[in-house]
Amino acid sequence: MSEHTPANTPESDNPISRIEPRIETRRLKCSSGRVADLTGTGMRLLVSSSNKPEVGDVQSFTFKDKHHTIEVTGTVRWVADAQGLTRKCQVGIQFNDLAPKVREALMRLAVQGNLGEPGKPIDEVEIKYPDLYKMLGVTPYATDDEIRRAYHIEARRWHPDLNKSESAADHFETLTKAYEVLRDPEMRLRYDQRFGDERAA
Picture 1 (spheres, one colour):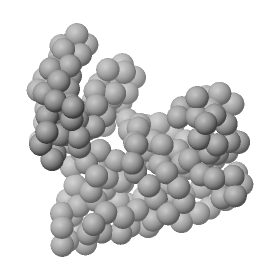
Picture 2: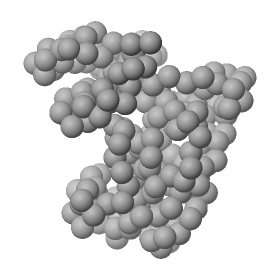
Picture 3: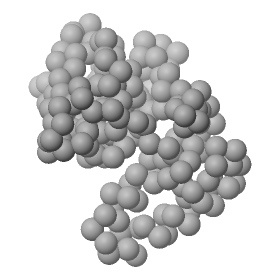
Picture 4: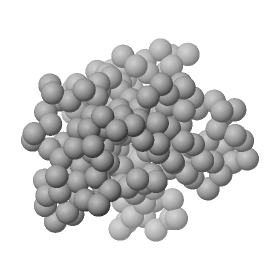
């Protein structure tokens, strides 16, 4: 399937270190194409064949919301030819020397859809990674079953087919992203290791 890391680029051979949770996105775009998933260290792009880069290329990527624009550079680590219905090539990007606040801004963009507070330059915004446990209404000590039950309760509450508020669709998508991280043991462990101190502060 074109929406997943291609079989010829397994994690063991992929130079992009997944030290932070990978956030799958549906609507996030940058100047080079659609972002399929994103971490604080890299991303997977879906691009047209005409825009396919070469492994080793260093490129600039622009991300925007309604109030901010940030540019980052990244190195192409792997490329997979177009396949499936999307006919899009997949490109693995490793970010180069991101400032901590830029890294947090990208993660916030993936999860919440914005880079920072309106009217403030991105380098002046203190951005915190969202508390995924709080989103689902559970504690960091919740069992897998408790997390699953909490997600299903919140998902029914916020599903756009059942909830007609303007924020329902975005809230439902955010809940789903939180659940995708916490239901995966490896991703949950990495999240806890990376953001446990921040939650306790």
